[in-house]
Image 1: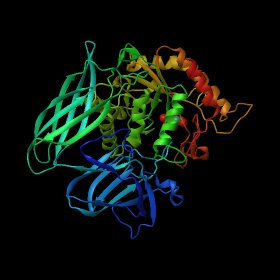
Image 2 (image 1 turned 45 degrees about the horizontal axis):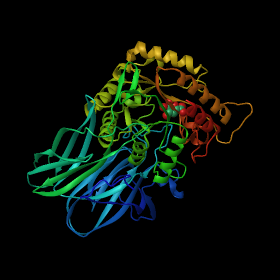
Image 3 (image 1 turned 60 degrees about the vertical axis):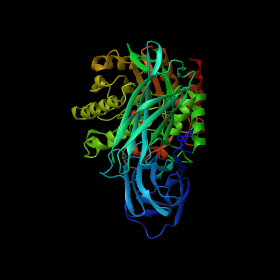
Image 4 (image 1 turned 180 degrees about the horizontal axis):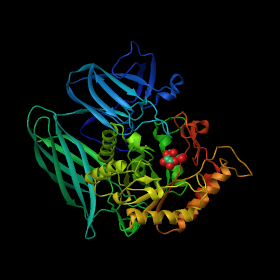
Length: 559
Ligand code: ADA
């Protein structure tokens, strides 16, 4: 399943789901002699007994049959982490990063059978600046859906809709991008359907190989706003007409809501909002990073059951189906680009700047319409305490503002009073672990953090505790409540939550973390975690609840 709703009525699309041929490969672009395995797509190769710890290159093969000549667009929602795509022996796309989509457009494909080879590489090297050995696991393979689309010479490449309230009445800005892959200049007319109105969005002339853009703002006076309590969604449809024929369309869902910051508060539709949520990795013992809908839905049900109203997509952009569910359920999302704990030296990797900017751009452009996404964030716990690191924070936060000025931006910092970038963000966010990595009192530490923020460029900005938590090994129960026991984890989370809920300058709190996750095996304290897991989950990697689950549920539901 690609999304929770149909994304096209005119464009023909098909999910290429199923068992694909698979073989480990020597390197990207080097086909093996045979394909001895069959692996599910989407899926992680770690789920196959032969490849449980495989790190390297693999190649998937799929044969595609076409009955008519057409232009093809292949959309890959996520390949982990470096991809090369060959169609009938020709390289048609390359992409870096597991967590954003990319496409391959192949014009004039003849009827008959065609061969698609998709290489995926999850190895760590200088070439990969963001996927590095870390406190989560970089799985291998085609981890998100693949879609085959048939398109004409002109097609809609994206639609980005920004709701806005003007003197109490809703309006929305449409931005439609049209691409011409044909040989002839054409005039494109676009019609926009939304909330019972069907209005022309304008027309543009697009030359061969070019893109055209339409931007128009229209009034929607009778719509119901989207809120966490009443997540009203609307279907939006753009229809492209060329030479008097409706030749393509684009369907998405949007919500009318505004998220702003004012006097240290976060406001949703002008009303104060306090986010109470969890950090979640897309990782499950039975699925790796390739979540089937059922397991995603279960995670969301557990998050709702806990009494949370928010999720932080630590530490990368999510599968859109989870975001679709958050849109429907009224769960707020802090979505962040891909990075965790990169040192200055790692940020100095020559590939860091482009790889990090690319994932930021793709995240915003691809997830723009989700009303549940209330905050964009960058670079969790990287070198924001250095001048050189600040350059990247500034570039990425500016890029987000250019792409989307309608949402506040943040980053999660662990640098305390050494932080140098609070002035660049709209919300100041701290990762602090009182009771676990330090024996500080959570309330006193939060007060101190507010003072650091005020002194370091964050005065007047809302503050979020973006991470706090403790290890709790599933099944380790102890009357002594030692560190690592389920009892101690529950105690630490209770004291943190109770302290933050009471402080009215705190606009959000995100428990680290929803579920245990696999981490990279290696040396040093970070990569030598027991059981090769980060065990700070409220549930374990199979979603079995620990004692802390009930404690958190009780505290959040009471408040
Ligand atoms: C961090 C980090 C998380 C995780 C956590 C921990 O602050 O952002 O990814 O590693 O600490 O468990 O220590």
